[in-house]
Length: 427
Image 1 (cartoon, helix red, strand yellow):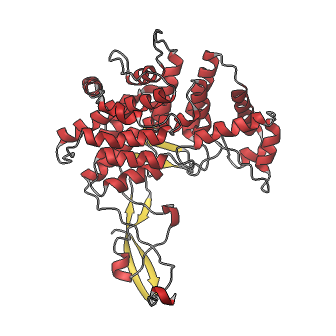
Image 2: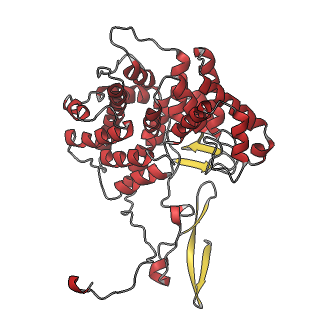
Image 3: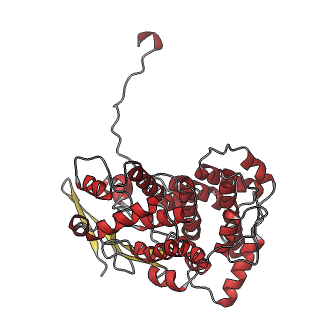
């Protein structure tokens, strides 16, 4: 016998079915709440509201668990490369050798961006924020690929997916190269997906491209760690926009705009800005650790703790190792990165932070790595978007294949009651 939840209101009782997920997550199905009881729920920020059932990502913030399609993030980061994880998220299974080879080649075939796109890029000033440029360029892809995706056709869906996976890194690289006054380029088909991205971003004219393997490994892990994170702000935006049957590119463009916000994708940028401010103040990390403990002090320690993870961020444990490897391998001398190491050490040893489980999170370490690699601060969120792209695609695809209804939240009206209209002369 299936379980139900009972709601009692105004002397009447209403029964609602219980939905249980494969990891024993329990939800009350309230689809019929308004129809039967004339009530709606009020949940600002949707912190306790499940917008969908999804088979893509499982997250347990209390236990510090993150899994993609059932695979532990620790295993994927250690044993898989980014494109394997992309395939897994979108299609549900890890690819075999032939599937991965075809997927990789199909993406490469779609990596050319129409030359007319360069004219759109030219229209932006160098001062334009890279996320605004990237969102606009992604949306502009629609003009060069106007046919809508037939979601009932696996071939149509597949073509749209490899097309955006091929073109998106080019757009991201062009965004950086425009900012750095470098000529726009294309990739190298002989390179892997992540190394090719790095080359497109950093290759200099008249100079042979080379890169340390530790850099590519760190980038690969960062992209994997950011690939999906359940129903966060940008992912929910992609699903919401897609629920109107807007196309994939338009939905992704909306997701980029949502990610742009400092409370979401801009968190690693905020980490570096905080470190810069500490440096400008003299670099006394102990002083700022004390400020962070003082509830009366407006200073906030960025990159520590997480809204979802109440114990530790499993992604931070993985990327900390890569951060240590990159900084050691490159031998970078940077006072800002020294400050970051100091904050990390003190937080891990300070009872105040340990008791409250305010450990460095993935944003803290990703900001450190991006800075070490010479990526400008305002490009950090673009790197986040590159990693999150497959998750957005997977979520959009799942939502369309399940024929989910158009998103349409309700509200509780708190404005004026009915008022009589007064002619202009009587106001």
